[in-house]
Amino acid sequence: MKERERVSRRDAEKGNRVRLQKALASAGLASRRHAETYILDRRVSVNGVIVDRLGTLVDPDVDELRVDGELLTAPRRLTYVLLNKPRDAVTTAFDPEGRRTVIDLIELPGVRLFPVGRLDRYTTGALLLTDDGELAARLLHPRYKVEKRYVLRLRPPVPDTALEHMAAGTELEDGHLTQPCEVLRLPERHPGECSLEVRLREGHKRQVRLMAQACGLKLISLHRVAFAGLSTQGLAPGTWRRLRAGEVIMLRQLAQL
Image 1: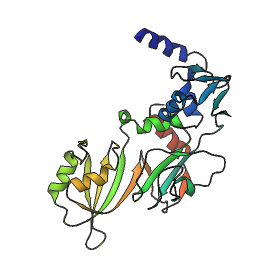
Image 2: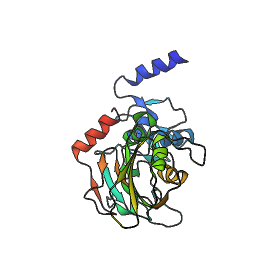
Image 3: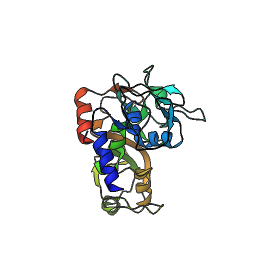
Image 4: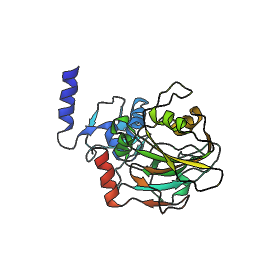
């Protein structure tokens, strides 16, 4: 079996042949993991033949790829957008309850973006959106240890013991033990409030909120000030901008692409 996998990898390196799920992700369909689901659900065809094997090799420049019968073509230019997500926007492309989504905030006709990771409805701040599925998958993978920075506004008291507990690793209510992280006490800006900056390199669901809760802290608001080195500085809530070329290069280096 291992020998077969080695042969498959060598084949994929020849010419423009790549694994089908990578071709789908590179075309902006979804992340590679979601692309695998499309294949296993028999929704993808190659040159008119339904394919349900993840190891299938294709040449995106030659083979005809279709998803649900719709011809898939690689975008000429990949799009990378940084959004300063406002409160009450949900991190999804479509919400069955009709709530405002992060996609609704970005006006780019003809571009099919998806968010890289999630921020819950009440968390604000840095959110990357792109149609580069390969990059998105790597930035979310624990292997690459992408840094996220959050500012927490809290009601006092905030004892040093709570900060030490949070920094050393916190057991959440679902049993997950967080990795050690950096916790900094920030200067007071508002009477009756305290602020912390938390820097971590993992992405457990609602992690920072649950960490604060586990340490007995009363959270007023949570804002992600930076994701993978991309900062919300200069971006008003609900506004966005395209990434600069140097920022895209930085992200691809971070993801070892």
